[in-house]
Image (cartoon, rainbow, N blue to C red; front, side, top):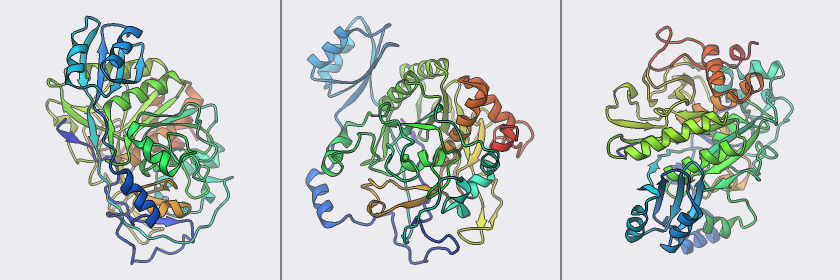
Amino acid sequence: MIRHSRSAALALCALLTLTACDAAPDAVAPDLDSPAPPPAALQEALAGLGAQEAAPQHLILTRGRWSPDLADAVRAQGGEVLYQHPMGMLFVSGLDGAGVEALSGRGDVAAVEADVWYSLDAGLDGAPEDAVVASPDNPAAAFFFARQWHMRAMGADAAWAAGRLGSPSVTVAIIDTGIDYLYPDLQGRVDLGRSVSFVPADAPFLEAFFPTRHPVTDLHFHGTHVAATAVSNGLAAAGVTSRPTLIGIKACSFQTFSCSLGAVVSGLLHAADNGADVVNMSLGGGFPKDGLGPLVAFINQVMTYVNRQGTTVVVSAGNDATDLDRNGNIFTTYCDAPGVICVSATGPTAAGSVNGPFMNVDAPSTFTNFGRSAISVAAPGGNTGAPVWAGCSTSSLVLAICRTGTFVVGISGTSMAAPHVSGLAALVVEDVGRHPGRVKSAIQQGAEDLGQPGTDKFYGKGRIHAGRTLGL
């Protein structure tokens, strides 16, 4: 892989507990690029565990359906099967070179490919304040709604006013660093029975610090922020919707903030086979089409399968300010895959205060990838004027302060744009059913046509708008 999408935060403008929204936080915010150190006891325990090296991981692609005999052969070579799917894939860990060679020689194996990791970046700063809780009955009453320019820009408030708050029968899967399902905005929204982790290296930390928690628990903060942007109880900050069900799928390590290709495709298949109506993927990267041809073909095969299962896939375009029309031999994951909704980012270029007024809210974000052939729609993702606001994981081992109360965090990136589309997609599913093509078409037709008429390199078919899409 030669390019990494920085689909985490480019700039995290503030980290705050629930408190009065009428004034900006103090200018003496601590620098969280180097997050505040954890309490001494936790620091000592972290040092004792040390960095958990991930065992070598591979994707085994088979000729037709896999057989139990192949799984047995993996174990005989010292490997562990993390996930397997009848379409012809095993995601395994622990194989050495001899094991890879032995399995590659089998007649039922088409390829044994080393896993690919997508490295993501995050830049943070902010200040804490006292906690307060608002009412969950109306998203516009969420405590930090005043600074959520992004919900107003996409017309989410118009949907709320019309009673379009989503349905628990519609499910949105979040493939990310996990979800803090105990965060107030997410309590009761996450189906833990269908949630899963494909990141074994997180397990020792979970056992040490949160032994009673589900493996999908977010030890970072990114996945919780993404989930609460799409679906939120509206206590701390509003989400696009309030009532859909979430599935957490952990595919990204909190230690390195990198996401495994094997874990991501396993998560996609798990989501599709477990009834997810929408999958959000705020992650991505790219690699040469010729060098990793089998993986490109396999990703396309997975996306086609997921689409046929009735699952709409929303992906972030990436934060490299790259023209995806001119990326040559690079396969951009996952905007180059069939059937996806690829989302670029927009946001204000200036603000009078943390609560606005916000200027030029539909400007293309300075970091967003673009390209007429790639971008489906644009959505609020933050910009130089303001970030996107949502919850911070109370189980974060990266931002120690978030474990001490109910915090919201402001982040900018196409990672933040994608869940706005996923939340809207959950509402569209109520109207058109589990038909990804219809969902994508409705979102594109309802978007506000910005930039060049028709298809613009930054906006695609336009910046999403909930009111227009839902016919309000």
